[in-house]
Image 1 (cartoon, rainbow, N blue to C red):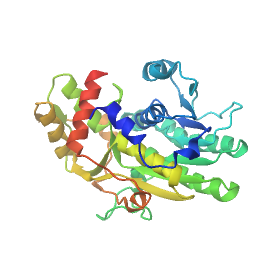
Image 2: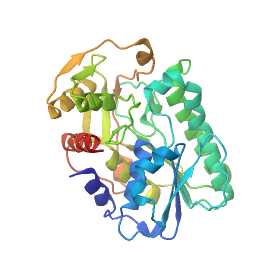
Image 3: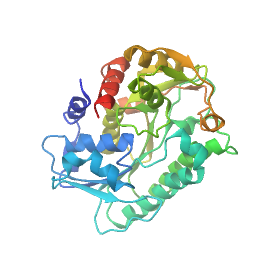
Image 4: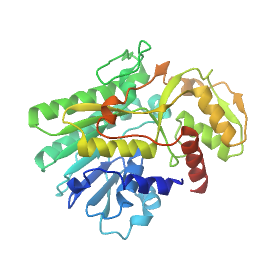
Length: 339
């Protein structure tokens, strides 16, 4: 199926949608990969009777991404950088914080900005929600909080090793701190908060500057080039299609327990970087070739050798995944070429 068809299928899921009826839903990071898809799902669901407030730093990007909703009375875009306090007079009943610098390039060039977005963002949004009748907060953390493990499948109660004295740790360390801040707000102020820990997520609407590995591979295909591998590709990862990830976030928002974390991953999509490159090359009828990375590129790399997630807690809420990774990667590449 095409991306738009996948979105509409999420809107048909057996979820307690009535919880959103008449409510205001704020999505921070709405122009990012996950945030944009979350907006798309909500805006394409039949019977919509809630207001979607999409927030991001770029008005130009918002006009491009959300032009289809420009005349909808249920859609609102708010230009805002979450490192600054949120100043308005709207009661947001639900907040999804998906705002984060998730590109390896940023870890090397703007590590301070990455840390501020993760930590200050949570503080600013929860502070506003605390004072304005917030009903549920979902923080989109990251599977990188697990760090380097001992080979086991990561469950939500596990914690591996992160070298906090490295610049690359700006991302996992600030995500860990932000999770603790969520826990602290919930304990001290009684706010209902759930944490989502997505694995590596892929989907069609990445930017030209996105240096995540799958985006680099697909851009190679779109330009008629071979896939450029800049490592031996042995790192083993859990992956998840962005629409499946957003479906999981909705389960967490509408059914997730307070002060609980939930892994998000498609366990049928556990593959190595090399296997990922070969899959995308096959879809694009190209080859995989080796290139030497620059010093800056290497400084942003995720050095964890194995990152595989358990999703038992999420599945207990009713979430499930259908289809294969190859089918979804084909839909991703087709949609990326069409946009």
